[in-house]
Length: 70
Image (cartoon, rainbow, N blue to C red; front, side, top):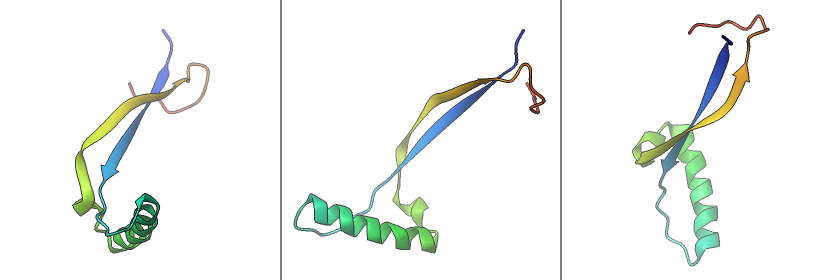
């Protein structure tokens, strides 16, 4: 039997509302607004429910001294 560590990657999704003339302006404004939202610790108010999880890298740690807790 071998020892493996399996990485899970979770993608969280957020929505930021902005007024803009086109998609590029909306993107620029949203990025600037997002910086302020993060600094204020308010990102949880912009989170939407559908986060994604997927398997990332799988590491074989059988022959290593890596801490292991199955």
